[in-house]
Image (cartoon, rainbow, N blue to C red; front, side, top):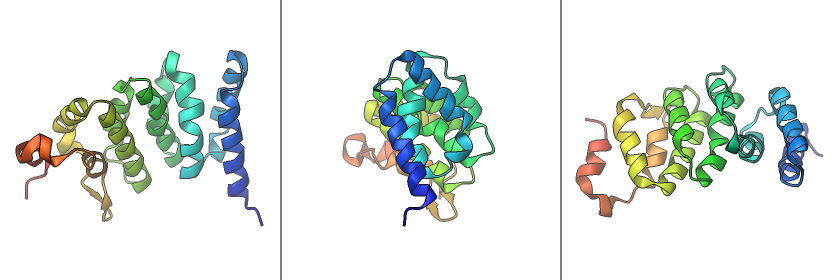
Length: 178
């Protein structure tokens, strides 16, 4: 038996795929439709399937104020959309919004936000490890280290940093005091 969640996931995948097969006017309609129906994009798999393709791609050449509005939302799904949508921006070489939104989400209480933030920071770090390390050095004290025993954004993003080339001094400088 197919569940409503499975149907919504399939629709999100179809909408994401069709986004690239249409012209600018239709893409705008799909983007507007997506934003008008965010209440139905309420599961991590729906967000991760659709946000980079629909929101991120749409915002590549536009103002990104909607991302900051979503990042400040009380709705978990909207906050996750804000950070996960930046994956497309990162792949285009633009990490500025990822870092700014990550800073807004560091103290979020929800593990799904920590995981998404760490994931996008790790993606940004693949683009530029130096920028990631500088960002973490600047913000490390503001990052929640643990959220109910789960890994934090910092833990996830630092996991990409190789220990050997950086040396123990830099890694130790990013670690919390005992």
